[in-house]
Length: 324
Ligand SMILES: CC(C)(COP(=O)(O)OP(=O)(O)OC[C@H]1O[C@@H](n2cnc3c(N)ncnc32)[C@H](O)[C@@H]1OP(=O)(O)O)[C@@H](O)C(=O)NCCC(=O)NCCS
Image 1: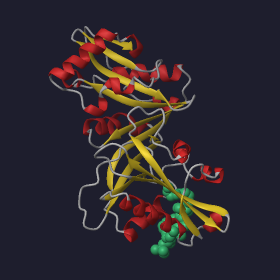
Image 2 (image 1 turned 135 degrees about the vertical axis):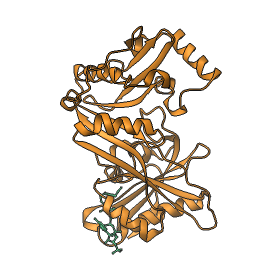
Image 3 (image 1 turned 90 degrees about the horizontal axis):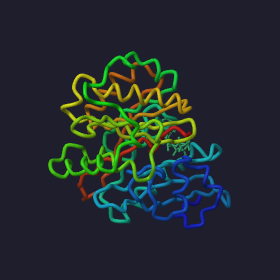
């Protein structure tokens, strides 16, 4: 077996060796880690190929950050079935460590989904290769249109008096400007939940909604289309003083109905652990009624003599994610 750093153009035989969401990375040019994901950071992809004679038999894909403070990330490892069980997968994981260390980073990170195929293998490697103890990163739910309509709180909570739920496309430029102004005056929205971050690249207009109050826009559920059938609930928030006593549920009720009307048959909602309210919301109001609930986990390998923390890596995509 030979392992080599890939250079563009990459042999098409390597393309099926990573997740569809990462295949654009095999152009090996600077790019957002995930296309159509506005909050996705730009990375420089790096790939190592494995050959048995002339035949490509394995691939490691990693991303080096182009944004200060982000860690490099191991994104996927794949070995063709006939070459498995000979240590090649581990060699590819080690190659990722060498790539990150040679590029001068203090650590390499990875995220993966609990229970996905490949997870048992990867969690075994963590111990062997000296990675940190895994930590929970996000709680994800995957649900069907039928499940969305089965949640017991659907349509049970009324919108507060004086407020209305409107399609997000009807939020005016003035309302957005006022929201931005109030955030500048006294920040109240977490940076990763700022609605305008999720609008620029286009959002799912039929299902995204906002809560209009006499004080302006105070809540939103902004979604993105993953495929024709699959909707992602990307960014939802309600101002704290408006959010008590389940006041975001009417927004989700409307959005769930709109999801079904728009023909989406499945959906994803991902709550990062650094937003505990959101995790509680998912655990209490969605998870009990849907078929798939999963934690994503994260870990990192710190390199010798460099003990900087290896920050969080966001998103549901990552090492050992289900192939879709
Ligand atoms: C997972 C995968 C990369 C493993 O490749 P591989 O070349 O067969 O793996 P290795 O031979 O390097 O595995 C070596 C070690 O892992 C262990 N291992 C292999 N499969 C395992 C499993 N399912 N659970 C736990 N340990 C496992 C082996 O026992 C061996 O450990 P040891 O040397 O300590 O005894 C390969 O099966 C694959 O490509 N699967 C599909 C894609 C995937 O799931 N990728 C991983 C996440 S991105």
